[in-house]
Image (cartoon, rainbow, N blue to C red):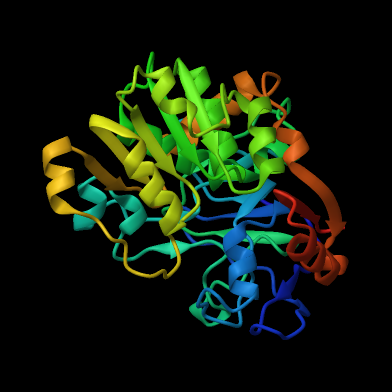
Length: 356
């Protein structure tokens, strides 16, 4: 079913250092399993800013933005959410950052985010044949294989937008980490990932959550999101000098990763999440890992179940932690260049872009 709509508009990224081009696009003709969303809000992720600044390769020209919330304006027959509930025109939805085939080796191995036919929102070049695939636009074309979640009206846009990036990624990291109840956990980096991790850890029963960041202001903010300490030196006193049970690196900094490794107890576990850009090689002493029985695992993106978990978490816990305050400013799409400049210069956790 469909409703009348204006011609889709978008801000097109053509390359680092170049202004965005505002363009009109034809309304897509949907195939089986597809949908069209009218975008209500998109928040700028750090990876968007890395692409804009030239630190991250991109298939330009493209429409950036993957932290998106919107409403279905056209659907195809049989479209369902991750939980199996039917979806209809007007439903408010979030969707996984990556669409997958559900049939290739990696999909069958439980790694749909590494599908051999992966389609990634906010990362696809216009030449891919599905140009309306990013959030810096009025509409987004959802391809077959996209996993959707219906978002309750009670969850504000500013809370829901990052769910299909930061919140779901943290959910994946904690799924991999295992039961956190009663444990002492160190989180390195107090950006959106780290603050979300602190909140999720506390909601899952972690006894102590120590959040470390080189920016004192960001570290202090972690106390609003469940951190029991922001002092790295307290880890050993909290654990009778054993070290923490689990460490999560959300920063991607080699120095932070080295510090995370040093914080672990014998048998401790390190989950790497923030290392999504090139760095110098990490110096690791294999004998130390063996004798201390340390486990290290990387987590990139997430599975559909992690996105469902993220939305459910925000629905039930949004009033316990000030997630809405992390999206400090809001701009109309036409003021995108100013929004980017403010995001780079002032470094708020997130800024929001609305189509109008």
